[in-house]
Image (cartoon, rainbow, N blue to C red; front, side):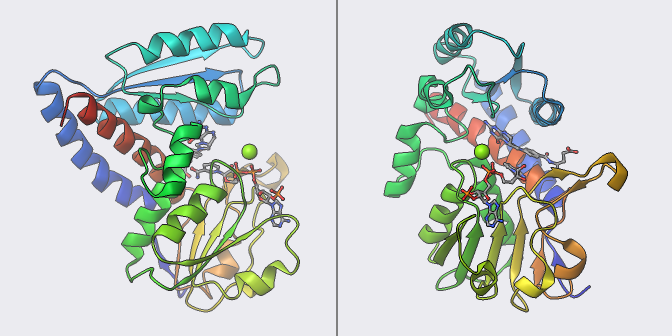
Length: 287
Ligand SMILES: NC(=O)C1=CN([C@@H]2O[C@H](COP(=O)(O)OP(=O)(O)OC[C@H]3O[C@@H](n4cnc5c(N)ncnc54)[C@H](OP(=O)(O)O)[C@@H]3O)[C@@H](O)[C@H]2O)C=CC1
Ligand SMILES: Nc1nc(=O)c2c([nH]1)NC[C@@H]1CN(c3ccc(C(=O)N[C@@H](CCC(=O)O)C(=O)O)cc3)C=[N+]21
Ligand SMILES: [Mg+2]
């Protein structure tokens, strides 16, 4: 292995210790940071992430509430709960786990969250603010990736960054943060002609594709920083393990630095959710 391992668990641990100190200080003044997580349906992967989020809150001394709804829940019921949480002074962050079941209009649900409590950064007002360069909350996964890049060291200015994926929750905000950091950014997707041409030019390569081991060593520029956002569960006959969108074994021999899965971007996503919730609580307390 030639690549340096970018350890998301270690960085998450370091940052969360600081958040805990700040949360205790704020609580001593009467404001304990509070996060509400809404989960609709029984998707087992979503249940794991939501449980991780709630546990992370408890460890950092945050207040949290987990609200579970059955897969056939009426959208009006969830929207009424969001309105209640918007008005609840003990709650500084509201997260609705995506994807939602088909009877829901996802955009309508995201717009119902108060932008001041939208710690995912998915509300249209916050997406617009990010694009204009005045972000209120940075979306957690791209924010976590920026922290990992900081840890990798070196300036981002003038670097070639290539993002594979253009979703609203990862690819697009990731490209925006890299652009603001001074990278020259290319966004690739399923219609990109000659993906390898782009990826082999990348000093920083971010894979958010949703396909196991999609990025192989031959697609990577020697010395590049490779960030694996993908979370894929392999079928039972292949061991049932989690794996990323990057073929770790071949890419680690070419890249200069690489994130593992698990233990890379995933724990940093949860960490930046805590960061945003704390920030929101500090704003609510007038700090
Ligand atoms: N670690 C974490 O904290 C998080 C991890 N994830 C994981 O990250 C991955 C991506 O998530 P998300 O963005 O929501 O996924 P989406 O399915 O919404 O987006 C995937 C993107 O990959 C593109 N794509 C698909 N196939 C190809 C291909 N053959 N060549 C080039 N591009 C392709 C799609 O292109 P097109 O737009 O043309 O369809 C799309 O833009 C998933 O594995 C997900 O589980 C997601 C969120 C947080
Ligand atoms: N409104 C909303 N906000 C999100 O931030 C959001 C979402 N919906 N829907 C789904 C994706 C996915 N996501 C992950 C978070 C943590 C891990 C994580 O902790 N991963 C661990 C392993 C977890 C495991 O063992 O399964 C790791 O990579 O080490 C993974 C994925 C947040 N998402
Ligand atoms: Mg999607």
